[in-house]
Length: 286
Ligand SMILES: [Cu+2]
Picture 1 (cartoon, protein in one colour):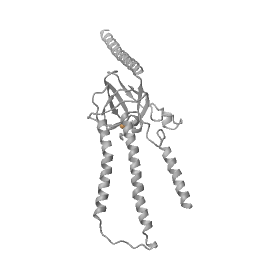
Picture 2: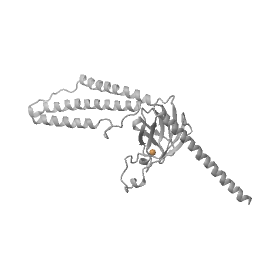
Picture 3: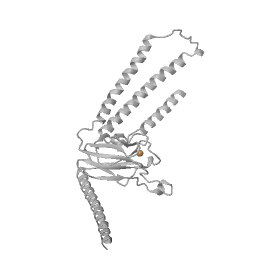
Picture 4: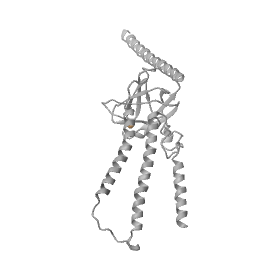
């Protein structure tokens, strides 16, 4: 009777744990929003089930053996040294399990590295401590900006309560169109950083002096947040990444506006330089 209620309690706890693992729960991964992120998620879940099965099988056999053959119930120890059959079995079975787990994982890793024929290319540069973005190819080519933490200082030092996207908000989002293959080229200006956006299935180191690349195709519009994932100095936690996915028309509009505003600021800078030069010329002439 007592053991039954223990089993029931363990069952209830396991169910509660399992339901807390649902997509969107804070204990689980973020909801995957790209093909790669889905592959990663599905394989994670599959591996967890395999691990659970192995855990139950191994500990089941172990505890059964210990309890069933204990000295106090009069069991006599067997007296053999080794068993070739058992050794072959416990070598071959893990090999089969490992190969079965490695096959889909390898396929996904190869897919992750396939950055060929992108619709657009964005270069992300890690700085201590912010990100710089340059749109190198595709619609929006020529766009270039820095993206810095926008969480107010008062929240950082505790004078104000933490906002909803505490430390996961920036002034300039990386804006991309939905359904397009976006190649992200990564490098860094000072130390190693890493560009990590879990929902899009991208996590890639940004190494000074080297170019690495990765890619994603966002399934649906939305805002996806990530962080630098390589300990890069005292403000490592203050250089988040925010990817904003727009539908195609909204993206075109954003790109045109951004390019125009960049031109304006370039023109403004040129006009300012010219004004300064003219003023200098004037003062020299006088
Ligand atoms: Cu960093």
